[in-house]
Each structure stands twice: as C-alpha cells, then as structure tokens.
Image 1 (cartoon, helix red, strand yellow):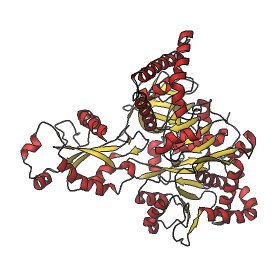
Image 2 (cartoon, rainbow, N blue to C red; image 1 turned 120 degrees about the vertical axis):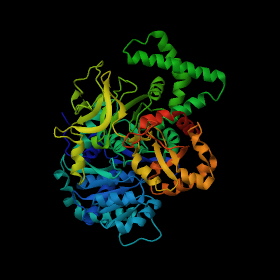
Image 3 (cartoon, helix red, strand yellow; image 1 turned 30 degrees about the vertical axis):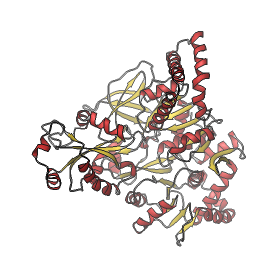
Image 4 (cartoon, helix red, strand yellow; image 1 turned 45 degrees about the horizontal axis):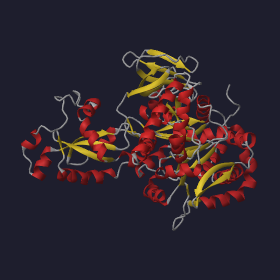
Length: 624
C-alpha cells in the first residue's frame, strides 16, 4: 500500500509537522566557512513568499517555469513553491550552451526564469531576443543594471512577503486540487539526433519512485543527512537526495563544489550520499595513494586490512558465519585503518548510492571491504529514475540490483521481439539467470511522454505500456545487470549522456578533418580519434605518400596536433563543456570497409575500432 499523499509538496508538510516539528533544521549550507542550518519553518516562509510573487505574476497550475542554477537552498524553496501551486519545474543544466538553453526555454513554453550566477545571466542575455516567452527573470545575483523584466531573488522575497496575506487563501486552495497525474517537472534529455526532448514527469512518477527507493534502501531514515553535490537539474539527484529527503524527513547539506566534496565530508558529516562512479573512483584512488605514500609498514598494514575486510565481506555476502578469529582480525583492521578512512569521510557515512553510470566492480568491492555499502542502481530520466537497486543486505557487485517493488522489468530478444523474461520484486530468486536482450520497464514511474513529441514517445513506449530503455542487459543472481548499449550513446563516468554523431558533425566543419571517432563511454572525459584530410596534410606540411603508408597507424607528430587543435578549440565553443574533446590521437589513414572499421553503409563499427586502437586510447587517457 502506498502512503496517503496526493502530491509532492505534501511530503515536506508531513516531514515538518508529523515526523519532526517546524523548528527542526532541514537544509545546511556553508556560509562564512561554517555549515549553518535552515529550519522547516524558515523553509515554509520562503516558499510562501515565492508562491505569492509567482501568483502575482500570473503563474498558475500547469505553467512552466525554468530554473538554471547550482544546488542551493533557494533551489528547493523555489521548486517547492512551484509544486505548491501546481506549476512545472523546467530545470536546465547550467553547463549547456546558450543555443541549447534557448531551445529548451522555447520548446517547454517556459514563462519565467530563475537564473543563478552572473555568468548564467550573461549567457542568457545572448539569447534573450530568441526567448520571447520569458516574461520575467529572477536573478540570484544583482547585476549592474536591472531591466523592467528582471528582479533579484531578495527583492522577489520582499515583494512576496507583502503580497502573501492577501493571496494566502487563494494559493492554499490550489494544493488540494493537485493530483498524482499532474506534472511536476520537465527534464530535457537528448534524443538519437541530439535534439533535446522534454521528459514529462508527474507528481506520482516521483512519489512512487520515492516509495520504491525506500523499500530497497530501508536503512535510510529521518536521522540521516545527505550530502548533495550532483546537479538538481538531473533526475537522479532530484529523486535520490531531494525528494527522498522530503519524504523521510532527512536533512540535506549542500557541497560547495565537486572539488571540495572531500573537505565538505569532514565539515557536514553526512550519513548518505548519492554519487556517480567517477567520484567513487577518485576517492578509492586517493585512499590507495595516501596509504602507499608513507612507510612500508603502514602500507603493509593497509593491504592486510583490506584483505581482512574482503574476507569478512565475502562471508557476510554469502550468509556464512564470520567466525571469532576473523571477527577479532576485522576489529583490529577497523581500528587501525577503516576508522581513519571513515573519519576522512565525516565519520558517519553508512551508504553511498551509485547511479548515473556504470560502477566498476572493484570500486564497489573496495568500499564494501572497508565497511561502507555502495548501493548501485539503474534507471533513466524517463523512469524517474530508479528501476533497480542493490539491496543493503545483499550486494552483487557488477549488477544494478533488484527490481523495484512497484515495477516490472522484461528482457526482450532484440532479433525476435519476444520477451525472454518478466521479473518483479516478488518474483525474485537469488540464483535466477536470464538471457540477454533489451531492458524494458513498466510501472507508475514511467514518464507521461516527451513534451510535444508523440512520435518520439510512441517509439519508446509500446502499446502494452513497456518503456524500451535502449540498454542491453540480463538477470544474474536475481539482479539486473547492464551489459551493453543498444545504440551508440555514450555515458561518461560522471553520468553525462554523450551522442557522438552531432558532436562529430560540429568538428567535421573543419576543412582539416576527414573523419572523427568520439570516445567517452564510462570515462570522465570525451576524447577522439581524428583522421586529417590527406590533401590538407600534404599541402600544409609537404608530406608524401610514405607518411600515410607507415605501419604505425597513429602519428604523434606535435606539429600536426597543434595544427588540428586550432580548429578543435574554435569549434568546441558551440558544444556543452561535457561534450568537448579533452584530447585526441591522430590516425594516418581513414577508417575503411576493407579494414572492417566501417559497415557497407559506411557507419563506424564502434566495438571494432575501440578494440583495434585500445592501446593508443589507454595511453592517451593515462596522459590526460
């Protein structure tokens, strides 16, 4: 049975008045070098002021309002105000280009815009004339001059405060009219063509996913504190940290930046954090380097402790008795090593939720060895997002966990379209294995569709209600395991979706480039293999045919690289930061059908190319 809530704002009301009292601290932000708290009562005051202002500006139920800002308490104040009056949050990544931002603002029919820092304001001014639908802009920072269509956040609060008494009754009457099917947010994700699509998510899409998340992570409760650093504009952080905290009454502390996460751990003392694989990889790498940078004795103690932790973890995961001697050894390892690592992470951390990308198996095992559970999950923007999560008491590293209680997951044979298996939470068997195919999902978490794109919606949600994820997977030991991509979409280790074709098309505008192959799946940065045009190389560098006939297919000529970098840097400006090439290697001859690098229709064979040039690619990443 679901809890008796009809909309997301009721989560916050319940936490403030039923789980806690309004005086309880809810949000924590670092100011003047110290984390200070904001109570539920103060949160509601800010929400009321924002509601009054929005209402006075004509924003009503169903209207879209865009937000472009980093994580902060004001994001939650503003979003809760939108939820309270039934408006729709259109969150936009701050890192998107001005052109992409303009597209989303226009496509979503957004009427108002909340802007974060001065840089974001300046970026918007470049596209202001393209975004006629934006009739008011709210600025977090005060510019040198304000236009008639702009107001600062503080001024908005002041105005809303004066308006609230006269609008309170009318605004309070809206909340009871908001139901499960009403829209809560648009989150834009790129399609196969690279054109952003507005994923429409309802109140119940998010609510049901909160219920599922808590069922799969029952150890999270009202006494927990989340550290938030992933963008709230991403569905993962919005659900796993923000909405889940409002549901269970947990606290949220905001990290200053990804660079300061390690420092913020020790200052905010979180118990839970939603993160991406790359952060866990960095933490593991830092711990290993620190442990082996001292004396040989301390390094030996560290290595011994990890082995003890691994033995204890295996026993625990297999459901076997640990035994007295191993218990004593583990207690010593905890005292000498593990407790010190945990202290660096604030001393209270009990769970890391990993999503937004594939977690290397050894990383999950490492944290398990030191006594910190990593609950790896799987999902998409269109599924709000969780489909499956590794359970707290049962970790199968390398998998994405058990199917959520309110959902069904099917594996469909790619060739025949036949469903190989349909699994639910209740059908779970610890030794169940299935064949491999496309992962399909069905449940109350599935999006309402893509805004104004019925054909795109019909392409991914079939007549039986199955959402086709585009991912390849299977069941292993009862848990869902992601094994491949159905299409060429790349996902970086930071969780960003990268679509190679539009990126390649941007760089191919250079007259110097013949072909380009984008690399970036499960990696922090996007890189490439570039094939320069032969005639341009000959003309500019005076090269002869011998250069192109050499046995080594890759050249490390620094002059050629500098020549190509001129255009690469110039063209990168029209791409989002996470799409830009960080480095590249240079191939002498074009990819060809003869070398089995291209299909007969001249499409790149991604796996073949990546395997063939693996050594050069790995060397390139090692040097970044």
